[in-house]
Image (cartoon, rainbow, N blue to C red):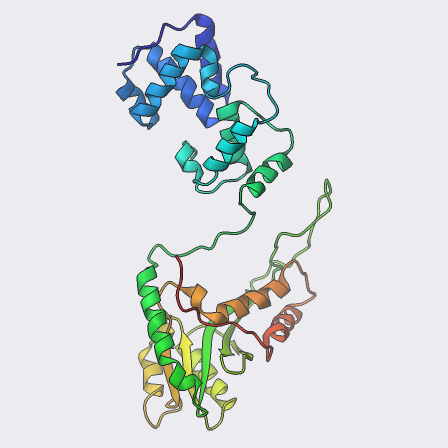
Length: 348
């Protein structure tokens, strides 16, 4: 068992202040650990209380025995008002940023300014006045400010890749035939409210975009032809079996005397009994062959990228009416060319 010398009243007060008032989790934990050790708590007890490894607690106590109060700053002993990082410290930060913040005890999944600020303050007692300094640290260590790609917990990469392999094995006979058109399809909805995205705005000046807040919306069925790259949109009053059957019948009119191979997701109305009846011989959709994309993988559907393009055209814009909004959305997609392809596999 590692023991520390008894804390002086001044040291206790310092550690209590850091424990109660510091907004840095690492400083609070080190201060807390030393206060518990001063109460003759065992390393095991302290580790359980702080939910830390016993080896980590042991190292903190050893550091205190060697360096005293400055141990809560861990790797920064003397100048507690430093404003710059040394070359060694920068190298250590570079190594640290290759792992998620949770590896350093920070309750976050991704690095951001508050996380790196807390880490650097806790490790080296360095605090920069401007957030721009932290931006540079993140940027020069291979990180960029972007939205992560969400995916469902039920997503199975192996299952997705197996299904994509099957799709690519089946498609050539349709793509290489003059009798067939090959389309990918999906549904989308837009509302009459400007979608606010990040933009380059003037510093120290509040920028306001006036928006309409309305319950108006419009559903669409979209199909991208993988042969001629042209996109098509069809308005829907709702996303259900009846509306999808109407959309497929309207879509078919664009390709008279052609068979259609249609690839889309696993929405319940894409597999309904009523739709299956329409696909049977002598019925209105008998010329359509359906293939389903793998479940929980919207990113593999090229039509999703078409929707994104259309919605990007609406971003940060306030139009006078919902009719104008719909017209802008439709005109940005309808009969335009998009060279999006079905990927052969996914990495995640």
